[in-house]
Amino acid sequence: MMENEIKTNETQVNTEQAHYITKVYGWMALGTVISGLVAFFTNHNPAIAKMIISNSYTFWVLIGLQVGIIIFLTALINKMSANIAVVSFVLYSIVTGFVFSSLYTVITLGGDIASTFFIISAMFGLMAAIGHFTKTDLKSTGRIILMGLVGCVIATSVNYFMDSDALYWITSFAGVVIFIGLVVIDSKKLKEINKIGNEGSDDDEKEAIMGAVCLYIVF
Image 1 (cartoon, rainbow, N blue to C red):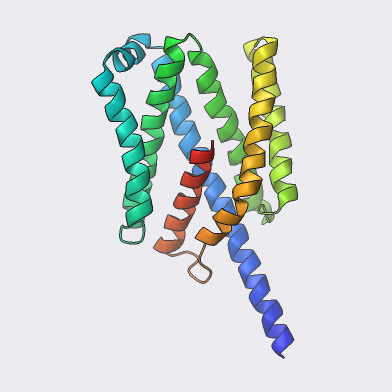
Image 2 (cartoon, one colour):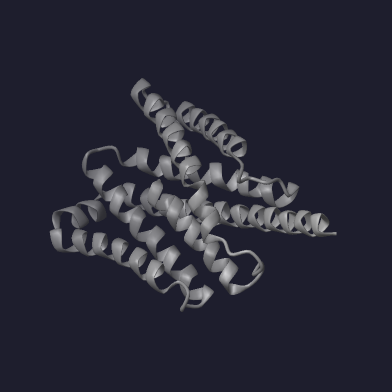
């Protein structure tokens, strides 16, 4: 009887963690696609990027806002509503898009940063869809490595159509591999954020957003 209860509890834990990781990946996909769209917009309006970079006050305000949102979420996540957490994450994604696209536009690599955001977004979005529709457990090391393979395939497609040079092909693949390695290392931390038994609640949603924030910082 006791053995059956232990197995049932383990199954519940594994199921909830699998759902949680799928939601984390979904939020990560949303965050990076938002940043990618902002970067794309900034790339096609270089005056905006130059205005941000040339005005040190504006640039450092954006950097401070980035850091401030992370501190705000980390310190007060348990006290805020899920809606405030969502708005904070979306705002962080927007600010990140402006900051990095501005830097890259000034050094004439603006187009690359937008495509990087979209590659990561497609990678996490595809894995989240697989986890959601097939109920596949994405938290194992094998699944994370599979995600890296998917990322390399996506990077290949993007680089091919963008007619990227050899250096960018190399950095794209190296970036995906390094990022996936860091995700594997950070997977334990992601699991620790998830509290079992609150699936479907506001707390569960906030945990998924915090997991996505952790991944975004790594990225």
